[in-house]
Image 1 (cartoon, rainbow, N blue to C red):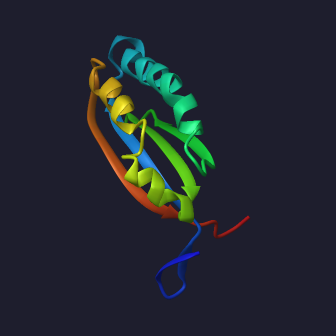
Image 2 (image 1 turned 180 degrees about the horizontal axis):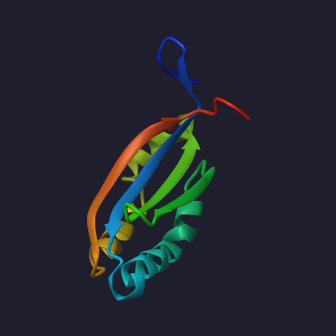
Length: 114
C-alpha cells in the first residue's frame, strides 16, 4: 500500500482520459466518443493488473471521462508502456468534430466507506 502523507494511503492508481463534448447535432460528439471507447475497451482490459474502467458523462458540464484503475503495484508497468492504448484513444477523440479540451490525469484511489 502506498502512502502520500500520514494517514493518506492508497491501494489503487487510476489514469483518466477526458474531454469536453458539444451538444450540437443531437450530441453527435458524445455518441462518437462512446464509439471510440468501445473500439479500445478490449485493449484496456488486457492491461496487466486491470481492475476496472469507469465512464463518467456530465450533461451539464459536457464532460466525457474514462477512468481505468490498476493496483498500485502494477501501475508503473502501464506507465512505462505509455498507458497503451491511450495514444490511440486520444487521437480518436481529437478527430471527432465537437470534441475539445482532451486531457489526461493520474491519481490515486482508496475506498473510505463501504
